[in-house]
Length: 227
Image 1 (tube, rainbow, N blue to C red):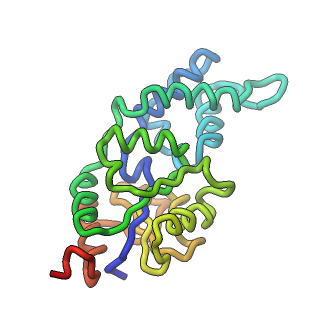
Image 2 (image 1 turned 135 degrees about the vertical axis):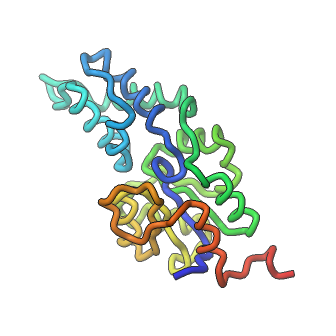
């Protein structure tokens, strides 16, 4: 299908390469507990399932005992430390992926409604979007902390579409992970994978991010194109 009338994006790994900043915040929380510093490349595959899963995986890989019991580290406290560090510096080394800036500008100019649906806490997601000067494109941002069942559950995507006033049957979710793909399938919404998505994402893949506006705008009438 082409001519989607609204687009929902994942954030980390889809619009933004945030692994350096996330790895830095994780290391500030884990190294004082005896963990080894994690490389951004080690952190990247951990993203997408929310803060609790990220911290648990990172703690295990870094060598911190994360049993969350009397003999282990309090992972909830580690997560709060991580969030505090990340919140204080969310956009130091984070960048938009190639083609994202121009694609978002083209979609915005054509009045295509856009939202962000991310398992990242919403306040930090908004900080990242603002810090990278793309917040103006997204009237709707739904973080994983605002809904009981976040991605891969359909509820998360449905909430974003509802707040956007979008029809799920003419919308598309753009993402980079199996979590995004599973969410789209559960919600019965079309899915497009970014070109750099891992092989575990098996759905239709964009040839380039710059190609997205053509897929959205083909056969689609928007207010600014009616003259």
